[in-house]
Image (cartoon, rainbow, N blue to C red; front, side, top):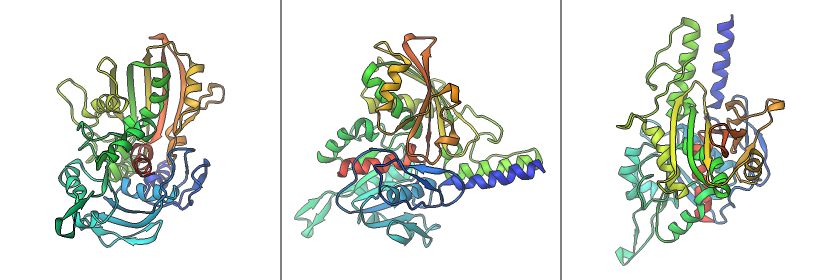
Length: 403
């Protein structure tokens, strides 16, 4: 009986996969809760993040039927992103499906470079290998009048790791370095990179603290949801959890080990220094986005846990200037895209349960570091991996460079 109830609850959680679209209209300047079309939960439209684009745009989403692609469609809808046209591009296997969009039901088409080049902005929600092969073809200049002159190709916003570490490609969290990205686009950049989801969530809390107090050391331990491995990861967690409850055994295909009732301190490939690539991404990308020198030390331990779509991170920082919990709360309270949940008397703090399907990153458990004293702080953040860590950040980049 107990197994049946819990298994049913697991099936109900499938609503968190992002497969259903939410229609809430524009009105993005007010933090607004909208009911989700499938499963429980709600999405909060974050206050005051980036101005909307004025001119309607032709948009293409490559990988439109995947977890991130579906979320991009939803974010465009909720933020009232002005659309002239929307193309949903995917593999031949997915072609022919029809999805709800802000412009009504649209049929998914098989990807070609030519179809993507008809857009003004192309969101890539595909693998790094695919992005590396096709991004430059998509952004190539458009020849006019038989080649007498050229006009710039579309802007590509890539969600993979293909371009993150290339010096000429801006790696963007709009609330941190959006203006830099906008300037680079004016100067001719056509490919913009979305950071790793773990980096993006941490950056939202770290940036305002760095601005006021200066970062010297950052130590991160992550608790990463199954959604980091895409739709297949979420489906495996749900399926194998139910199987474990029924048969006391779970198998694995997407993850290195079975994930139900387990934690796995192994995400991505191990590097020669003993860290995984996922862990090194946090160090590499934070330094690039913030413009930090090599003197700032960043270390991360990344762990996969059996939650669906919100990543949590325990962060310890050492700062250049003295820092107190009260001063940190004040700095974080005025930062866009953050929501402070920090009351130990009310048991109020960030969790996947209160962070899933929310645009804002939740921050709490703010306290003085016992290791670094008055130059250190411990805090806990939690954010939706598919939104702040992928789809929302991508759409905010488009808004920033096109406004």
